Image (cartoon, rainbow, N blue to C red):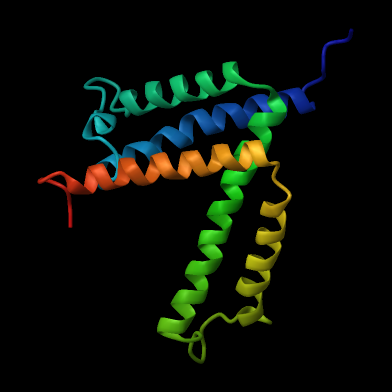
Length: 161
């Protein structure tokens, strides 16, 4: 079998994985700084100034997921999780528009802007209904675990208000 050429799908996948390994632990780190995750995840390496505990934590979690199932399961799980984030963003836009109204004169206004968030919610809802039951239950379990971790972090006496 011939080796893929530079710029191939395999190379692009590797670049994506490297980008995720560099970016995602920083989200964990920032969330820890905000008090949403355990403080241990916000430790920074003395010499390199990197959030090494968050990097290690993320690598272990990804490794466990990668070793526990097939690629199809992981792809559906990741996609379903991202769809939930998209749904949250669309709902937040609807809520912000209720609270703040549309942008004023001279500010950027997207054509058909008020229609986009509800339409997005409908599309995301339809896509979420396509997620197989097994993966849907796993995503629901992840959300439940996240709520428990969040509640526990907020219950600490030193948690930010």
